[in-house]
Image (cartoon, rainbow, N blue to C red; front, side, top):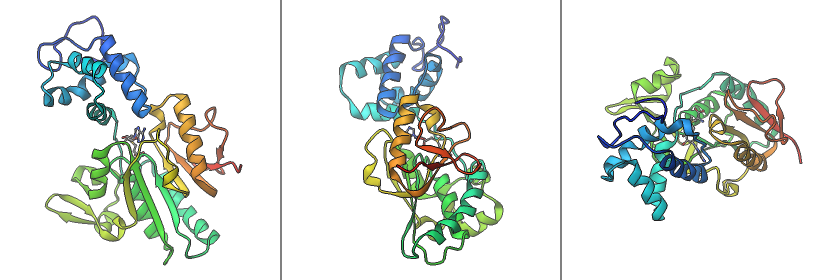
Length: 287
Ligand SMILES: C[S@@+](CC[C@H](N)C(=O)[O-])C[C@H]1O[C@@H](n2cnc3c(N)ncnc32)[C@H](O)[C@@H]1O
């Protein structure tokens, strides 16, 4: 498929129809932005076409023009959810970028010493995708030797499909090869006919819930650490600010925020400052 919706006429998704029109593309990208915060520019027409192809086929629409027309005329939440689900980019891997997990490993004993032994440490992965980030956190927690200290890790994501996958904790050979060291694979996964499944002592540290970051997140409670990695990049500055300000309200005193490699709080929210030179780690400015 071509990289842009230009004047070239090409075979469309349902076999024979034209590529998506700018007006139809706008109907879809407006919906995605309103529902998820994800911004897709006009140059992303190819992405809209390729990711929505399956929906058009499953629903036996004549093409994306019909899908866009239905969005304009009906209020169809189910269709809207399917579209957002298909548009999200769920790319993730175990121990992504390495350094945040190295930082976590060193920081957990500090948190442990700072709180009474019965107080749970709470960690939130706010765009958890298929769970690799949460299980990487859980393994780091187990290896930090915190004894009987209760630890709760919450993984949330807008995608129901990804959250369901994350709950299963079942990964292919390819997925475990992406970031999971061999020794940890042997220790924390069991080989099943369906793939590599995360073992119970790791899984029981983690809970997954479907949650949209644009919604009210207050019911999720207070956290010592928040991982919000590789999701802000998809949002415009207002949405980034809204999400960062909401996360700030979730952080316990001394709480830390971990962002992705291409993300920053600079120029977005003044409620965070870099944490002592650590890679992509920010501390919440006290109120
Ligand atoms: C690229 S993945 C990042 C996964 C993981 N944090 C990492 O860094 O490897 C981005 C995730 O953000 C989720 N996402 C996008 N918009 C969201 C929103 N409004 N609320 C919650 N999750 C969202 C997507 O479904 C996707 O799983």
